[in-house]
Length: 362
Image (cartoon, rainbow, N blue to C red; front, top):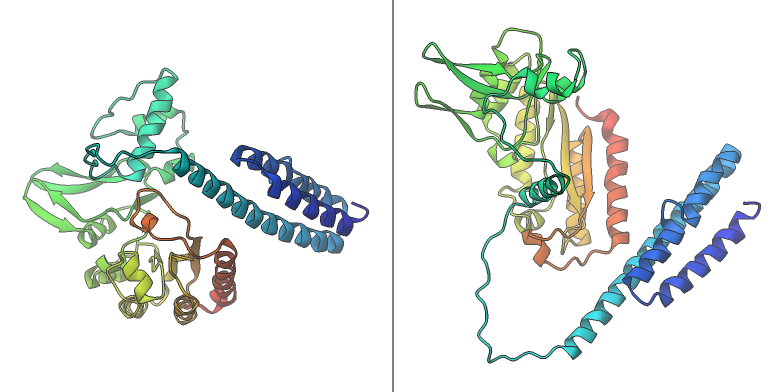
């Protein structure tokens, strides 16, 4: 590290040579690990910087990170070249008899989360475990005591859930575990009161939970903007136990991109919803989810997202760089926004959040 500039320059030259000569994906992966892996050259250099003075450490660290980003791009490019070469060679070798009757494709597929869950179950079954169904109404013993989780352990707060339990011809909301907090995800629609054959919506459920005696906090995660009703806003505004925090995913600030994402709302409808929420709940903390570099996203469309961020002034934003996911509708679209451009757009939005966080109406 006595001459980091020369060392990094030589590393860059050598790495590019090896990447260019990589014969296949396995060889390319070995080269990746050599330079960018946990025990790679650049990782080793970063770990050694702690011995340097703070100013020099920051300067050299910045150069190393830039080199890492540069090499990642080169690795991606070479991987695409190798895949394209393999594809062409395969097409040359293969021979297709178009007279052979084709097979009818299987329609539909399991949800990605279900596929992952089943793979995890297979792994545990291969280790000798059995998959069994637990009781429909679980007790504190099944969830915590049997897992050796102490009575006051904070993990109990994260495992809460709620159910409807008929009693004396009425339905009561009861907490299955800790009394500290109840959380519900965005997979909510309606909840049935079997005693009265009555359907209640999510807003009514929250109101029922809020009316339960006790000191606890209610939070729910990522509601869909298209399903966020005026009734739900009213309940949130009037309920003392519902946290003054809301994650409201927008995903994009451009109507065309929202349409490609199958998001059934427009940017203006989203802005109108945020306005209503802040009018009713002035001290709300608002976060959002957004994707940059979605297939076909132009600079102009991205700037519409930038404009939305500056207008809304979110407290927090979970910004994702688009990457293809098999089984999704977007997987069929051409991923034509480069990794470097996605990174640039991510930084722009992140800088806006860091700048505006202190001025957001919280």
